[in-house]
Image 1: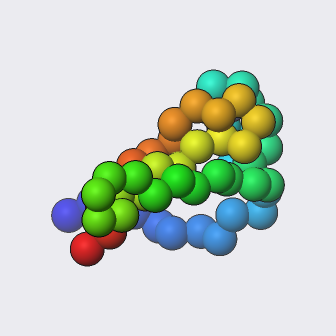
Image 2: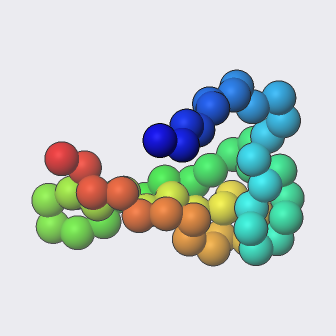
Length: 54
Ligand SMILES: [Zn+2]
């Protein structure tokens, strides 16, 4: 079976939209019971991910 190696990052991740280094990520809790967290780029405000808080 194929194996994936996990390596500690030596540089900051980049926003896929504006390509700025993500030294800050904004979070917004949305919906009635705050069950969802929206992560967006601090610089261009585009949504990077939506997480369901279990
Ligand atoms: Zn961005």
